[in-house]
Structures are given as structure tokens and as C-alpha cells.
Amino acid sequence: MANGSRQAAWEFFGAELKRRREDAGLTQSALGVRVFVSGGYIGQFEQAIRKPQLDVAERIDEVLQTDGFFERMCRKLIDDKRYADYFAAVVELEALATRICEFAPTLVPGLLQTAAYARAVTVAANPFVTDEYVDEKVTARLERARVLKDATRPEYWVVLHENALYIPVGGPEAMAQQLDHVAKLMRERHVLVMVLPYEAGAHANMTGDLRLMEFDDAPPTAYTETAFSGTLVDEPAVVVRAQRAYDLLRGAALPPKASLALVESAAEDYRRCTSTT
Image 1 (cartoon, rainbow, N blue to C red):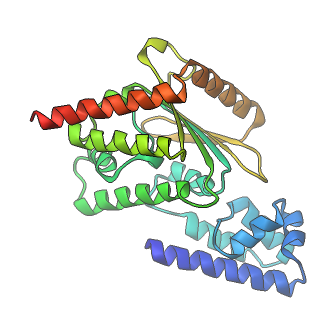
Image 2: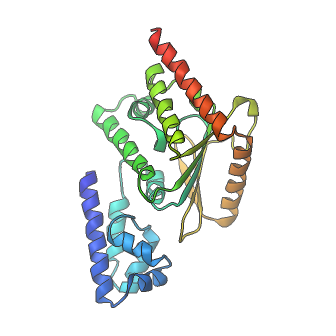
């Protein structure tokens, strides 16, 4: 489903939700209480600003007695083949999060990637696919980054391992552009990036990417990812352990000002490489 068609479908979802809620004689706040979200969230669902999680859609069906209508529609809309099955739910949650904390051990995170960098990552992992496939993946990744431009954008914290500054993804020119982009977002205070330097040595998460997401009206989640799979958990004890690991990573990282200087220095190094070739 094209992005425009998908948005139109979410707008239809919202219009139907408003119509059926009003038919049931419920305010947004009253429905929110019954499905365990705020009335403001119900309003944002109706305006297609935010998208409900599947369990919320199921509870809406129960309260409004709509025979699974919203659950079925939600399942169809979140079945987004632009993303791996294990990651599609994470994309939906990003749009709902009030705070995202991410640790990236080897690559610049997807929400911060430029088109050239995302293309190089995609081609490296899929060397035999068509240009159309690559374009689709890159476009999807750039669309995800719009969450950082919304008025309701989440706080976004990133602990970026120094690896990500010096693995030359896409070559010197692409890396210079990528690190310039990260530095710009840091200076504009759209994201808080701290670099975990090589000298920190062993650290609290040696096995892969880690992402923590917090929400206004739902418990926090933790997402971990390796090369071929990802795991999204909301079990409180596991999330607490993940939060502690992230706190340790943040404590070992360089402060924001020093991190920005390192990112800018690495970008300049790549520019010098470009100018001498």
C-alpha cells in the first residue's frame, strides 16, 4: 500500500471511530477511560495524527461493540511489508512514544540516517535486489525520521558507539554528509547524542542495538535487535534491566559537547579524504 493510500486509510479509521463513538453517546474522554488511554489520544486517533496499537483497537471494538471492525482494519494497516515483521510494531510505537533512548553499537540509527547512508546499508545487506526494492527501503527509512520533525516529537537520546563514526558506510562523501546531518540535529537540539568512545572498553550492552520507548498512557518497552531478528518486550522486570544497562552506557559516554566535537571532527576527516581523491 502506498504511503498516501495508507494515510487515507488511517483517516477513514479515525472518521469511523468518531462516528461510532458519537453513536454510542461517548465523549473522547469517556471512551479513553474504557480503553485505558487518554481522551486526547482518542482525539488524535480520530484525526489520524497517532495510530492505535492493536490491543487498543481490540478494546475499542469491545466497548463500541463493533464486531472486530477496528481490530481487522488495524491489523491490515500495520501489516507493512516495507519493514521486517519483527520491526513493524516498533515503527508504530515510535509515533506514539514521548521518549526514545537508543544505543547504536555499529551504525548510525535509522532515524538519523541520510538517503545515501541508508542506501549503502540496504545494498550491503541485500546485494542482489532490484533498485526498486532499495528505493522502497530507503524511502521507508526516511519517512520514519519524520517523527523527529513533528510538533509532538519525542525526546530522542542516542548513545552512539565510536564505531559508527569510523565505519565508512557508502564512502567518504556519504559519511561526511551523514555526520554533518547528525551534528546539525545535535546543534538544533532535536536529538541528544553522546558518543561511547573506544577507550571506554567493555560496556553494558555488547550484543546489539537497544531501544527504550516511553509513553504517556502505556508502560515502557524495550527493543533489542541483532542482525536477523528483534525482540520487543514490555515485561517490567526486563525493561528495568534494559533501562539500567542504558544508564550505564550513558554514564560511560562522552558528554554532549565533547560528543558533538568528535562527530564534527570525524566529518571533517571524511571531507579531507574526499578532497584528496
